[in-house]
Image (cartoon, rainbow, N blue to C red; front, side):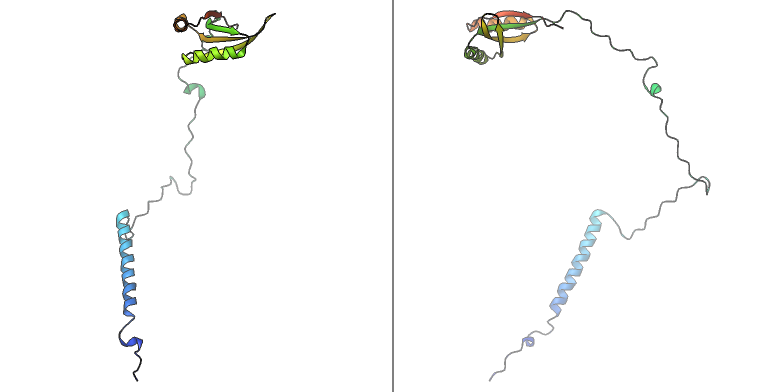
Length: 175
């Protein structure tokens, strides 16, 4: 009968592969460290001189800190004269505001319909609800406020082109 083949018989020095892998890993690690140092520009073998210790005025005497700057509030401000308060606005006549009233309705749905028609024309309107003595509740559709009569006339012309009558309302605010 034949003898079984042994495992070690075809490969002399089987541990040489493992030694090659370890040597390759060591060389790769050394190259990686070298490239990292080269890229960052640091040299671990360069010696740096320590900065000289600060010179004391006299040995054994405590160092005195520099005095903090002193600020005088009134000297820092520009100008020597005291500031004057701005003049209070004079109590002139309050500015007059103008509104265009497009309608007044007892039914709130009618007021909403008119407001929607005005919105389609690009005119922003507001509905004001008021109590009128002996007549009940009215819902006014008003456009404005306007500060200048030129704006009032442009809006009134647009309303007239679309067959919507409007009444000019002047309002003087009370102080």
